[in-house]
Length: 218
Image 1 (cartoon, rainbow, N blue to C red):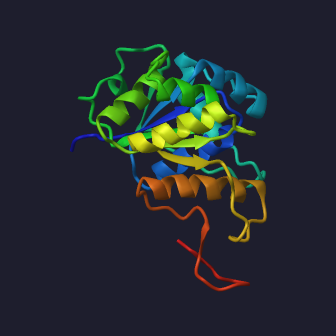
Image 2: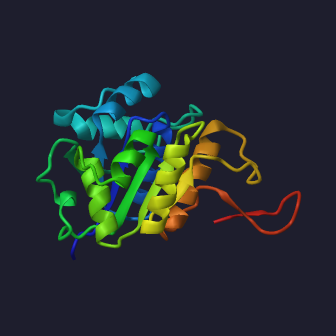
């Protein structure tokens, strides 16, 4: 069976828990995942989690990242057989080519710098190149933007990317789902990202049209 992964790009914006939640959701749905972590994202990951993401030990580091819940709950074991890791400087990597059979790409969290690079086709690293390939191949591209406030330049670039077919999802959690922990708020955003690419999940309670209990589980 042909492997068709979702490419997940992680930039240096604050919000590495969003990336972990999206990857967990994809793996939980039985999807294959290709991961690209930018150089700036490594610094943010250390700052937010204490985890050093190392090329030579990416499997151990990714597992530790995914298995560390924000609410100090019981860690969940993840098998990474469906995951492939590409270094950000590898321009010969699979996702750098339109002939590589990817389903689409999710950039989470997405920094303003990444928005700019993707909007103008800069392709300064594999993450930006893969996003440009996703656009030109008319595959789903979701940008989970984690930046505030947004400048006029970034807003115009996001509008341009929307016209090119990208879906822009601000990392803005909803509270109607009855979230009682930070992890549940993070999972809400991750769930909306997965909704945008048509991947089934059970990350949050959906609105059912009734106040005071109108959310239903997926």
